[in-house]
Image (tube, rainbow, N blue to C red; front, top):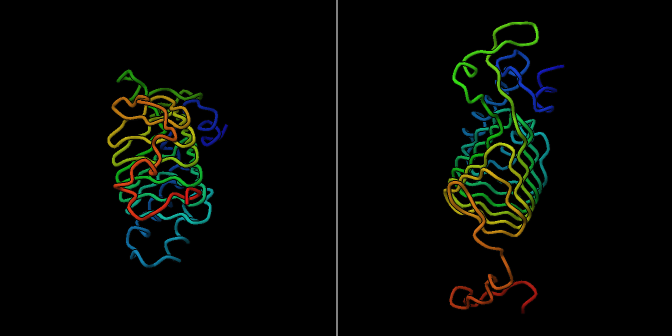
Length: 214
């Protein structure tokens, strides 16, 4: 089984294997290229992102700097925005839906290391060779999600459609759709309902309108 197949299967793999190192080195160099662009170099930025990211919809805007680990293991839907310092450690699959908005310093992590210190240092592969091994759990984020600043999403988490994750949260477990969740560890505070509409905040809405309420 190839190392990428091991990642997909959720079993231990060697992050130092030459095949994986080559993927990461290419992506890390592309990160540097992106981070050296100017904000108004729209076409150049999009071209670099499309070379990094496995699948990417239209209307994706990432402020930068960025830090993708593999890049090819990430899928991003349309109309996505991420603010400064977006980090995706996508050893395992990362899927982000349509119309999501992330504040600065959002981090998504998929790899998991052994808890026992000696096993983190070295284990034996199928051929009896000493290797540094870890495994990965995928992260799935639904449509229409908003993450506040400095949210960290941990391995194996699924976040449903329409969620708001409060600033500084560490998401260690699944969050159901249409939830406002926050904290470290992150927990569901309440469901998001029509009562949260801006129509009930006229002092903030001012002379603007909610679509369909005019």
